[in-house]
Length: 187
Image (cartoon, rainbow, N blue to C red):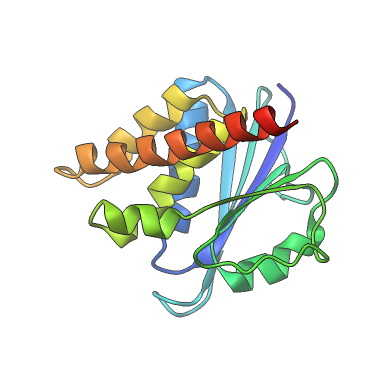
């Protein structure tokens, strides 16, 4: 595995930073990689812009700046408009289709969408859309193993919510697997 750069972005309150922490834990604790996480957010605690930038590598990460993300998780329209134009043909963009209106003219690479917010609402907690997205991420990328991310979710969420969060993860993962199987069938 070579150095992989990831960007997760959305609005405060969506669990963007927690998602970055979970992916970093998954990579380091369970996949035995090295990782760095930097974060950025506006002055508002909820509703303002925020992002998590993660670098994962088998070697020590000496420079944590994300300049060419291989995967971007964009969970708000503002995040999509800001970062999708920075994509390239080799990158992947994951969006919450309930919150992002896609414009094919402003991004390159492969774009995959999931109704993460809708799935989380069906499970009874809209706030778990980020965990649904992590399951989707695990299904459609190979950056971090599914088992590692699932275990990192389990140890990172508030006590007493582990099973509900793991259900959200599993729903996102199943959606991603179905999406991939459907795209293989149509090729």
